Image (cartoon, rainbow, N blue to C red; front, side, top):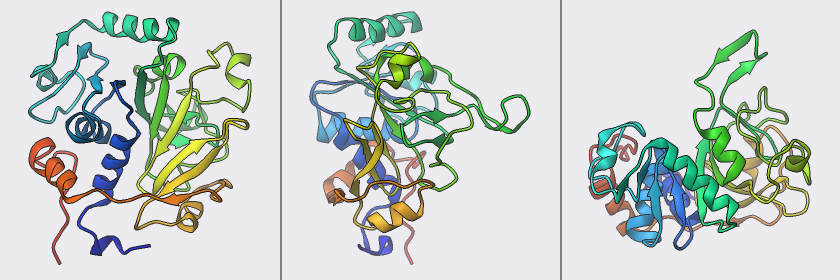
Length: 267
């Protein structure tokens, strides 16, 4: 384990690199703003150039020259291949599912997550009398229903909990067969969770989350300390950090105005 202060990249840059590494050849990638967009842009430029970025506002094969602030930001239109209405985006998502092509992967996030990848982005506490109310699903529930997903979270005990207060976006529900029991497609679901400490995946048999990769400045022990339930770390391996070229592309080409990626502070 290395001290993050001695590395040439930040936790955000490591997380963006981890996102890019999870994108596969020729995948259609649903991204929003923030780190998924940075990671997706990094994949399309350096790590996996054959991928195609799309957003739920209907823009396809996006390659923005400035970092958009939201999926409705006109900056997404620059250099995109197709400008479709939102309904065509939904049609593409369902068409990919019905034809079993499984080329599509989507990034979603939230405030809480449980061992089976169920995500809460609706409220903390009782739904009718919440301590905190969030913006809710947007398109995340529909995406989680018909697409394989990669989940984005900051790794904290208050976020990784045994049972989420509200299921906004379903994961593997309660284990094997859980999605089918509640009327959801059982052959798609969460594939990974990318945090600022590592990459979690889901066991094929139990559908429970386990630690697959930890970062150079992290460790299995740190991941467990920051997880509110027991997580299997026995097969975890250390992931290499991003190269100098990857960091140069992030800082100079993808997010030069530091909208989402903040630079390392010199001491």
